Amino acid sequence: MASRKFVIAFSSMATLPFPRFVSLVLKYPVDLKYYPRCFVAGLISLVIEPFRWIEKLVYDRKLANTPMPESPVFILGHWRSGTTLLHNAICNDKQFAYINTYQSVFTNQFFANRWLFKPLMKWLIPEKRPADNVLLSVDFPQEEELALCNAQSYSFYNFFYFPRQWKTFYNKYIGGQEANASDTAIYGRRYKKLIAQALLEYNRNEFISKNPPNTGRIKDLLTLFPNAKFIYIYRNPVKVYLSTVNFFQVTLEPLQLQSYSHRDFEEFVFELHERIIRDYETQKSLIPKGNLIEVRYEDFEQDPISGLENIYRTLSLKGFEAARPAFEAYLESQKKFEKGRHPLSEETLKEISRRCAYTLQLYGYHSEETGK
Image (cartoon, rainbow, N blue to C red; front, side, top):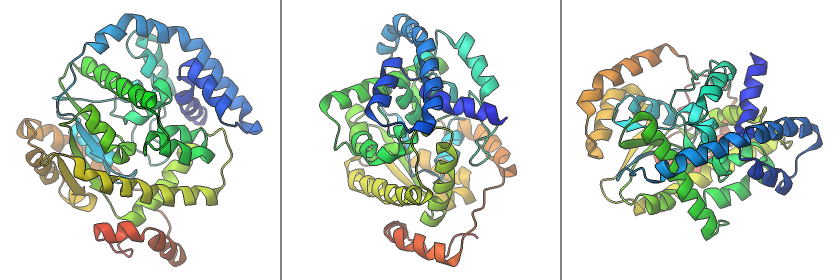
């Protein structure tokens, strides 16, 4: 099983268009000890490059002519804030299309060659996410950031390969400070193409998204979809920090092409946590009235059906009662999964409380509410 986890992990870079793969490894330094990993990923990228061109020739025009939804729904929130639970639940409403795990990895070979790549991915993918034991499947809902990364590398998730450049990737792909007009245009076209793939795959007209980096991209999303609707979910920052450190580190280990110390990693999580939430708070006023709902994770966890009903009512989404049985069945199935626990000393709690003071105060949490 360990080897399967390794293969599917590095394949997320190996499915990049080969020219983009080359440009990345030439632009950002690859540490010597990761040369073999980089070489294998590059070789796979080169071998599957012809399939990308088949996809473009056969499907690009059809995708370009696919009507976009007027009001796609975007789930926002810092990583480990409950975005996956909320997204997976709403995806049980059959009116919504979504990005699935297969699409997120084989974005460039999604339709024309899945007879080959989808069975291969089913064999390679682990049964559960190594970081938190959440079930995995090629057909399960997934966030768009990995798909954007694999499509054109226009993605914050480049930091998984080059963690020492995370601020550069944030500034360009979330904050927008280092992005030019061409970058923004490519991002918009590629995002709409991803959505078109999902709409065609599920033969649906509406789209539901879950993508934590979008938490700081509200302005860009509204440029693409002026009447988009947003669900923002937040959680106790102490728990979010502990869970994010664990999740990112486990995910980073088989992907990284640069060494990165544990202390540097902790500092990265602290900075990222405050920065993306500040960006959200700055931009949320741009959202038209009635198109945003903010959800406290702990409240949603206590009564998720009422939480979903409130989301549908607040955002004027249709179809809640029709989807209720599917929601209830999914949420009942999640009760058997035990949450991860993260040991926490008093000294560590004090440090996290100090560094997360902004978000603790912003959302009215107390650091002692950690459920240790």
